[in-house]
Picture 1: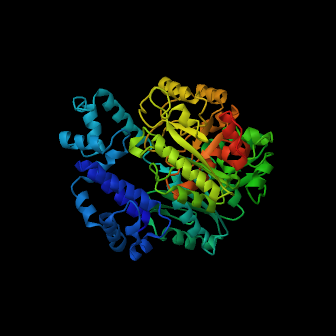
Picture 2: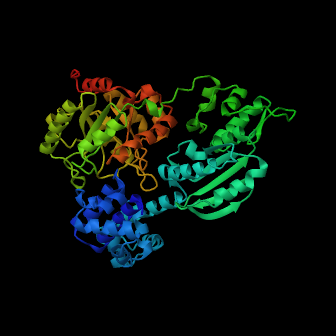
Picture 3: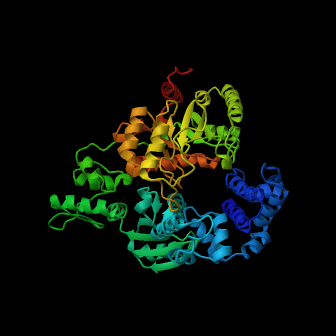
Length: 580
């Protein structure tokens, strides 16, 4: 059993125990263990077989026994018995924003609600309004949450679809008869959520049936939806539909372009081609006499249409065609240009790895610096740092900076924006830090005016460096609070506040549609993983895709700068000279 599967079961046990009303310390132990297992760098099977699993801080003897049973047998009797106490559909209620285990327990015990369908009916009958802790406003928010789930039921998070897509692509590309192959669709455009997986391949006609057999019979295929010589569709074990299209190698560039672009981009491209007297479709570019304009790759397709190559991330019909025709497309930021990582949590708050482990991992990634930003004191549920603990952390960071002269650790905080827009630490404490990220984590139910005013008041504080996950959204789970972006960006510009692109694939916040607007206002952005483990550091590179969709160049991104440059940027914000 993979560590991700073990972690998912441990997480679910924690939820089930909450539904039972168990001791919160016991439930938290399972949630923490799930996070620890997910972040393990060592092989879980090896840890179990050697007994080292028992030496990991945060995993006691009882938990180690359960993990061992899961890894060695593939099942856990304790979990199965616990699961049998509740209807399977009850856990679906957790997908609804604002509904936690305590409220679900109350709905189940007092109203007999077992499913989303039951809950929607109860809300429409106003049965929740009289329930203690709920009310008419809660009913309305739940109905909105149910509608949100229905709207997004056929979509998948980017990183989940990417993992499945890469696996399928490697399998297809590995067939000896495949000439060329490429992931296409919204995955190639690096959209934040994905409906399905598209793969385009080229092969000789005589080989197509064998390739399709290879595709549909591979491990991890849950269902074969359709099977033909030019197109086959499957459902993966993750529940995602994947389509493979096979064309001749001569047609490959045209098919790849067609099945990569959004519908709007493709329509606009065909319209432009018609103005040049060219017919454009998935099979080629054709002159008025129906003769093919030969193109060996996508670059030659764009050149034939008189424009610069448009990177896949920009193919959304949001001005990229006009920019390509006028030769003013930006040189988009590259993964290789990231020089440091900012916004990382350690075991001091709710992270799964120690300060030292996070530093070592970052150094091994070839980075120049790491910005540590554990939670502030009021975030008790995430073990936020008191002033004393924050200062002790600074002492340890200073020691590590002495130990690694070729690497820089910046000491910061993810400081909560309180409900009145004030910050969670006094000014004299904030002044001691290298940088300050401000974020909203509590009281998220705000109007546009309330949210905008709260955040702008916090940004106006002279010691604030970065605005973290600006809307607080969780993709496919929770919509962000509404913001007046014109006012937000104007304030960021006025107060010289950097805006975060939170690269955690559950967030991708700031949304790429507003990233370009922020850039156009002259605001610097930072691609931050919000890492809670060593594994989470690499989310930075997923965030590069969002930055590229927002038309960002390396110059627009904070963490493409060197450690010395970042130090100067941080120091200038605080009105003091850089140390080095």
